[in-house]
Image (cartoon, helix red, strand yellow):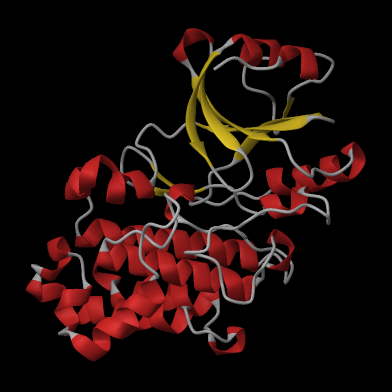
Length: 303
């Protein structure tokens, strides 16, 4: 992949903190490979000098004017939490935006659950999955605690990354705030709350719904509808409710989890949490703080 240096040659890379030993020219000359295409743009792995790798998200649609963008992106740069993937730097240009993050070599939760024909799931045992669920919930609740208008807006397993120790780092939080009001984007239907039709309609309650789908994904091992390919996947909330009516409850869970009989009670409790999160009506859903607290209580053995 080649960058477009002519388009952003007059721009500069702005770091949060003291910088990281490289400049925009280093980024533009680096070898870049596509990591994935998401709601807000395409992500690349960029190989910098001295074998340093970063993840670069390229936004090309509906961004704000420079002054308003700068104000909002600096608000994002201040958002830190042990389970959030921090924004390290950015570059603004009228034609596109570059956002720079740490590269996570272990990849995303989506890859671990669904990549390589499911062969990557071996490392995701019950303890790891509950730890991931709590880590994501903890990250989202930390965002919500910053104000009623602060929400992630695009919770999905491809935006949950894992460290070498399988610790959670949630990415792409609050990116909707960087888009102009007339921006038109399609949020992934499998995770999108019923009341949301645009990135500007997201809320604390819609975040809770999306997290509920993610929790169902962890428990069932199934990919949500259209999460990774058009027309594929399962409408997880409706599928789980239908399974309740037709099958034994153990058939809902990922087969690798269902074998651990000592965890059945906790599995059922977390399934109930996920179902409450995915209630159709926003005011019926619990708060993210209550969800994180319930997961912690249910799985207190590991936290």
